[in-house]
Amino acid sequence: MKKQPVERERKRLAHSLWKAFKSFSTFVPILLGVILSAGLFQSFLSKNMIASLFAGQILRDTLIGTLIGSILAGNPITSYVIGGELLKSGVSLFAVTAFIVAWVTVGVVQYPAEADILGRRFSALRNLLSFILAILVSMATVMTLRLIP
Amino acid sequence: MNKKNGQKKRSRFGVYFLAFVILVYLLLFVLQPEATQIALKVSGHLLVKIIPIFLLVILFMGITNYFLHPKIVSKYLGKTSGFKGWLLATSTGILSHGPIYAWYPLLKELRDHGMRSGLVAVFLYNRAIKIPLLPLMIYYFGINFVVILLIYMIIASLLEGKIIEIVER
Image 1 (cartoon, rainbow over the protein chains, first blue to last red):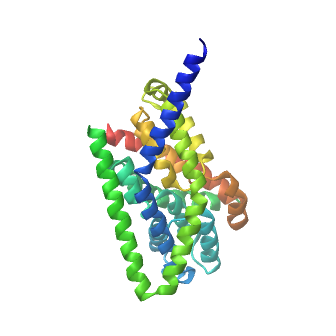
Image 2: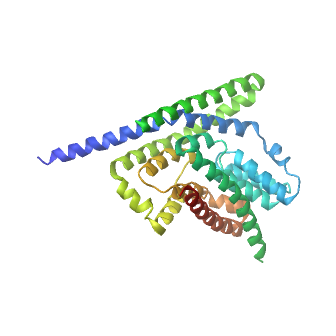
Image 3: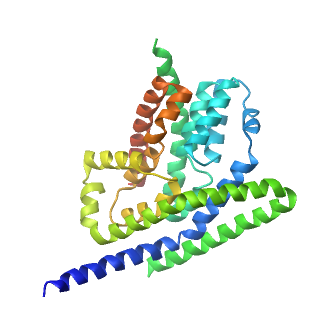
């Protein structure tokens, strides 16, 4: 007699998982598109190409750092490695910080998927705010760091 | 009905987008075959790494469907969630794994169940802070830099969430 509710719950759980799988499958083409785009960016943009974009002016370089970080996507480790190399080659910490923050918070490559799934207005606003905040976070971090003896 | 139409529209856009990217690959393959092959390999590696995350997300979505009724989501992540909601979105954002886009479907599911948009933004922003990667970040930039950056990033995430809520109100 008691088995009936258990059986019903099991069926409900299976149904929930099936529903989730079906719902997720509608996202597969766009997610595949994003993965393939990320591969393109990582393969066609070298570290030297990125370093050559910085000119030595703090404000301009911070903006360029944010822009490149927004366009490129991938594992944050890659951004630390590129950021470290950029620092070694004389790029300011402002620009490098903005670069590594924008790398993970702004997503130009992921934008089509984000807009499609979470809504165009929300995604546009989120990415725009993250872009501005990457610059502000970079400024605040480096300035605070300079206060520490 | 509307939801179904939305899903159809979404899957159609996804297919067009994928077709466009494949077309770009074909074009680049003609122009620069070696770099395009590397891009394909990089994407393949990404896909292999991301499949377990996708499975995890499907499982979470299933569990969300099964356990989380809109009332529960509203209580913890909805309009009346207050400080706890911000804390939950920040901490789960920091603890979540894998690429950001793997989490979009689950967040959509949670938002459909009543999660605030501001908290979705907070979750997405805090995904930038990855605890397992902190030692590497410290190695490259030093501990002072990392601690200061993380504090400012958490503040920025909350600020972003608040602004989004004000704009969307």
